[in-house]
Length: 99
Image (cartoon, rainbow, N blue to C red; front, top):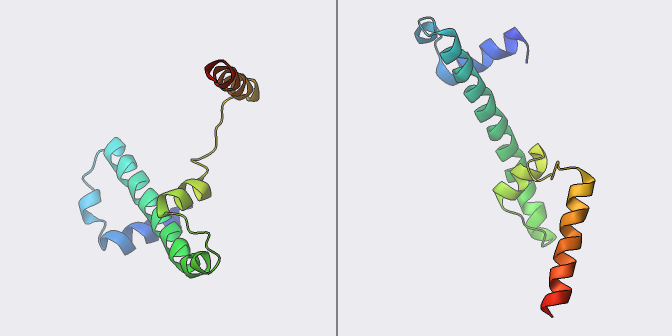
């Protein structure tokens, strides 16, 4: 986001920047990050609501949290492939030994 977009976001959400003028820098940055994250979540929610009827028609419904995780990449396992494969191998061994 550039400076103009940030100001627009803050003004749209909070209608006045006066109360922010007295904030400490770290507090302001934290406030700004919160505003950006809420804006992002609102946009994703709007997209979800627009897609909801199509999901219902195709019987491919997912909860908002599942949709949010998919859109933001929160559902991606970022561990190295070797670690994931080793975990799968251990699970297969446990299934074999437990049966």
